[in-house]
Length: 199
View 1: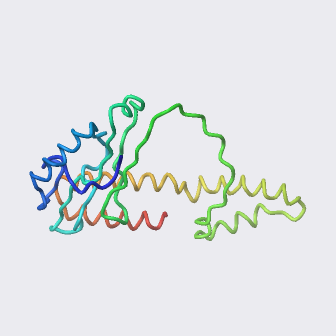
View 2 (view 1 turned 180 degrees about the horizontal axis):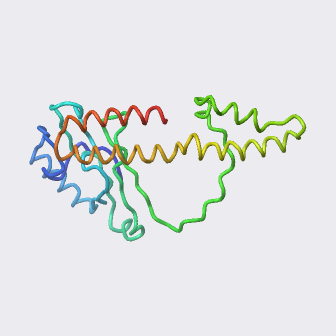
View 3 (view 1 turned 45 degrees about the horizontal axis):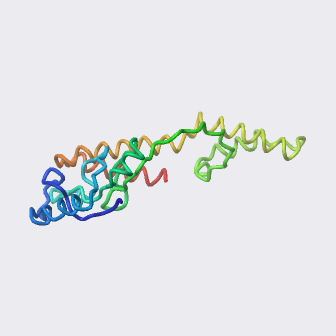
């Protein structure tokens, strides 16, 4: 089971959090023990919920978690949980990866990326490549090849840029979980804006 339990297990799972209640925590711990479930742990930023992350009134807690029983854990011993970066919501999404046999990915088919239209030089690639003395099939194959090369050399890999921004955002949020810093808060806003452009 995974989601927002709206509770923490101990004070270490909070950051400037005024709603800490030892009685509610005790009830939560007892419920977990009675149900025979275990917390799956995590990697990524410690806090899954943050409010006021861009000012000194910052507060947060690990309210979201994934838990399982021992049978499930024995069946999926390599399963892991990652707290992803918060983007447009005050809660971090949880990624539960159940490790299994990995298959080799098949080569990706050519896909025209709408984001390419934000660049003027994509038109010159099309004009340079498309020739009236070739068949439609030959033109589309050549154009796909040229656009793939142009994408790598000029436009860049959007998915890689997104991954880099997500990693930077996650790193900033990890650091801010321990101590608020105005410069990091500004950087987080800028990274979110850059990510919005990429998305």
